[in-house]
Length: 300
Ligand SMILES: NC(=O)c1ccc[n+]([C@@H]2O[C@H](COP(=O)([O-])OP(=O)(O)OC[C@H]3O[C@@H](n4cnc5c(N)ncnc54)[C@H](OP(=O)(O)O)[C@@H]3O)[C@@H](O)[C@H]2O)c1
Image (cartoon, rainbow, N blue to C red; front, top):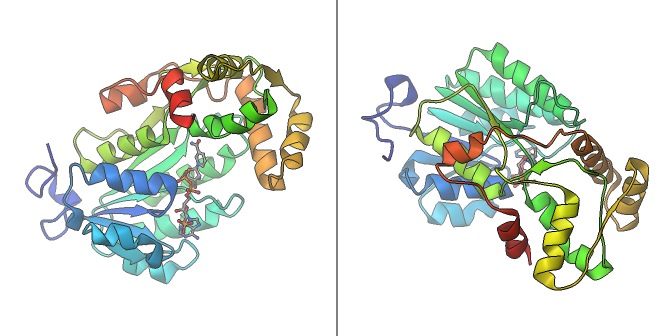
């Protein structure tokens, strides 16, 4: 059922209207969240809060309100969040700067008296061995301390993190990685976006914490085997120790912080940091998440 001013609690409406704000709306996840929201929510009730409004012209053309919101500019956040009843903070991609940026968003949301604050965190943020989880832990603590009503979407890995590299693996005749025998419960970015839209649209009672991960739990050797099967070319998996994998990523031109992040993530994945058997994402969506075969097919 599409949310209207009639079927949501009064605290989640503003002057009788729902106003859902999505930050980072010109990013990959943000665009998918808006697209998913538009299936159930009138465009006039959706605000795309973006750094560069010129890049959101296509969203404006669909009737979505576009407002400038830069995490580094508190005044822009205050005007962007005016009238917000629900807000999705899509975690920033500026690693190392995320805590002050997210704090600015949380503070502005509290000033705007947002009725529900939703945040894209990381799987098991409270105990995760991923080094990037530290900023998510700090952000979650700020959200809890803010007094805002909140929901934490602890997202597992996007399957695209791995399938984006399959072309290169085919070209080189091997899939390199550092996750060893670790299983990765990944789902499509679009599925995490759909989950965010469901939580924002109020179709279900909202939980404070969702541990969201894919139903398919694959190893990188299984990914390589599926790639081999579909391409008809033998592409073995080569597991590399963390430093060697980092050097390899640097060698193919990745910037140092990204090479560090990816090699750290794979090392943590080898110990189970990206695995999950809870199926909470599929249950929230009401359908199983993408299979490994379909993810590889989509990438090829
Ligand atoms: N679960 C996973 O596997 C996974 C993988 C990668 C990243 N992530 C996390 O999930 C987030 C969303 O993923 P994604 O694929 O959508 O990443 P993305 O395409 O890089 O999007 C990041 C968004 O953050 C916005 N942003 C960065 N600095 C900002 C600032 N100062 N003010 C306002 N907005 C700012 C960017 O704005 P612009 O559009 O203006 O650039 C962009 O829209 C990432 O930022 C990262 O924290 C998760």
